[in-house]
Image (cartoon, rainbow, N blue to C red; front, side, top):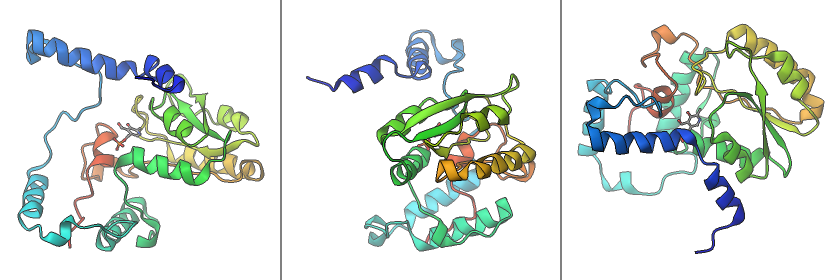
Length: 241
Ligand SMILES: Cc1ncc(COP(=O)(O)O)c(C=O)c1O
């Protein structure tokens, strides 16, 4: 089968983390799961809270035909309202349901955002190390991922970010808590970053920031041990119709 040159190239450079995960699965099958320590993917190391399973079972048990039909483009309005309420409390700023669009995961969300914002050749700035798929998300929509080094402790290097902004910069993509470093960027660095990107706005035309940063991790309903759970599991306050 003929595969596009670009895809061939991407496959050759595909994520080592994935390859290690697959190798881990192979080794576990060969030697037993208790003999292999798998530090590849950030899988949760805790089961979900029983309440989550309970609500999931209840949701499935009470499903009607309407639950299997097409939904409004932005998602079920009552879900958007619940999420807006949750984010308003969690982030401490007013957010309405009109500002919520439901997607299938963070990859879906970022692809929609990039499709909406990027013209060919536009740059997406992100601190590195970063999630390896960001390069592909930007490329999917004609953009170019530009990685900017962080400090040795993986905090934001605001001078480097400021210097990297050019007339091609369309997006500054911030992932916090960061995958893979686990670094949670400070409020002060966000404030400084805001003023940096604000200063550059005439050049950068538009700046979007994506973050799953909980402002008070200790009171968060999620275990504060990674970025996967908060993004993947809907807030517990979400109610179905
Ligand atoms: C930082 C980051 N962005 C995006 C994604 C993709 O997220 P999803 O699986 O929700 O599409 C992940 C997945 O691990 C991630 O860690």
